[in-house]
Image 1 (cartoon, one colour):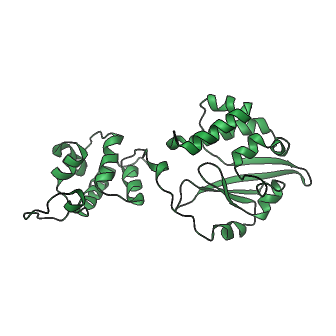
Image 2: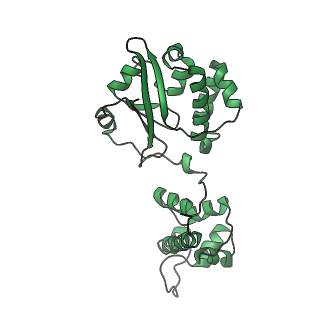
Image 3: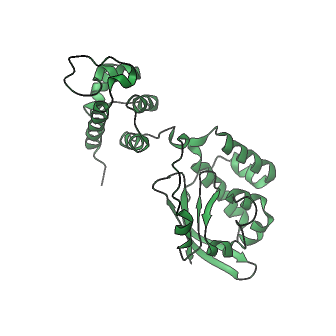
Length: 260
């Protein structure tokens, strides 16, 4: 069913009005005034703070079909003092990618994350935006023949720098090349982040395959599907991979391997 753009714009306008009403003039160093008939900022004030015309901002609140740049949405989010969830909601309604989404301070992961992963019967692990393994269960350790219990638990370093991956992962070169495209899609909003740049530089220097794949600029989703391993003790293992984003931390994902 096609999306109702008019309804989306009306909802966006209603959200902006509500958010504007919650911002006190003093939050921006503005005088409270004596003739304010409604709480919060006036339309002309929010427009001035964002460097746009009052008429144009009014049209946005009215749900009219106007074109708004990413920069203006960012300025509105800042001027309206939007929290993480509110900012995400704004950019979702605006059908626009938030350039700051990957740069926000992360919310702490729940203390019971490891217990949660341990309770999963199939091999499972949690990755952060740099593909560091934050938690994994015993079944996963079995499949990966002890990794990531040993060394630095980063999936990319394992795949491209650990010789064990070449014999464990069936069709290693093909799978590894796709992994690069998946990782590029994951870190699109983090271009220039020192940690990501350092990891990419390390992998380029240590793996000719990663270096070649990275320069191709191929981008794909981290899709599920068949994953095969040639285990040194258990022989050929086949799994179906499913990946889920964590609700409180969209930069982290839970990966599960179900018997294939």
